[in-house]
Length: 376
Image 1 (cartoon, rainbow, N blue to C red):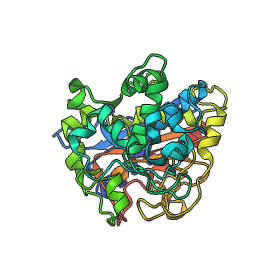
Image 2 (cartoon, helix red, strand yellow; image 1 turned 180 degrees about the vertical axis):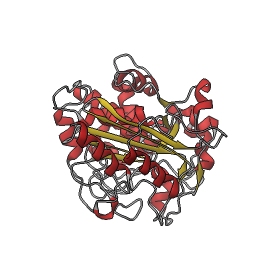
Image 3 (tube, one colour; image 1 turned 45 degrees about the vertical axis):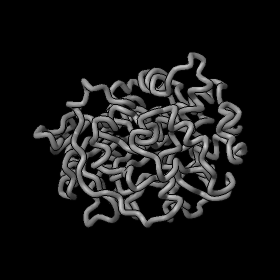
Image 4 (tube, one colour; image 1 turned 120 degrees about the vertical axis):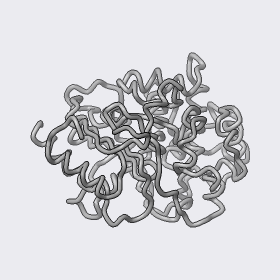
């Protein structure tokens, strides 16, 4: 079932399967050491999950896009409090000249859309999508309302990073060479090579059921769903959509969050500065999100400030105390706890939306915390 034989981790995996999960990986890093590396269940291809199985991670990919922006800001190539249009003039169209990177990262740009008529084939063409995003008409002035950007987020940050890159590389090359490989995330792919497809677990389960709204349809068109029907497609996995196309192992995913968790601590490799982490921990206004119609606890650095549904011992099952996280459609999650130096990723292939009779990942954080406490 798992390489980590700790009974608490095994029980957490069993609870996930009892909750309806099909295949799952859990990984955790503590101050640079891999302390949990575990898995259970089936890939959906007739093979059991193992430590090298790859899973689509959906919007956890946004943490990678945000991280690229932070890296370039730390190098002085981007001013996160400055306007996007300073480095991407076309983005100023239709009055978007006042939108800053901070607005984008905190999902308060007022321009969360890609257009309801966007086609699947258009999603695969970077220049087409960059032009689409630049030409969007805002739904609000910047900084006025929260409005999560399911797809456009990655193209705004990605195109800006690409434009200031000294080597003029593609965003996918920048991510690979400046974020993934330096952090040891070899098994995180933004644009899956064909020779790695055999490792990918097959997604199945529910599709998101969200109340219709004009903003939501323009930001996340219903014909481009965050669901198994779309994200199992080889062409989608190959494209590496910058807001949702990541495919990875839990080990690799947790490494990204380990860089946030260890900033400023003994042994910190220095990938992120403490100022970057401080920005990420600053919450945006706690208003209802205009895209989805409910509260989303997002910070100013592009990460979430809560890890939902991963603890049986916390109220509501959510970790909320100085947590940096990102969720993905259907229950995927990764998070960092900087005060502990701890990072965790939980990847899976059975998509869940809405309340569950049994929370599949409820025991994960409790089990990982218990293991970490014994190794601190």
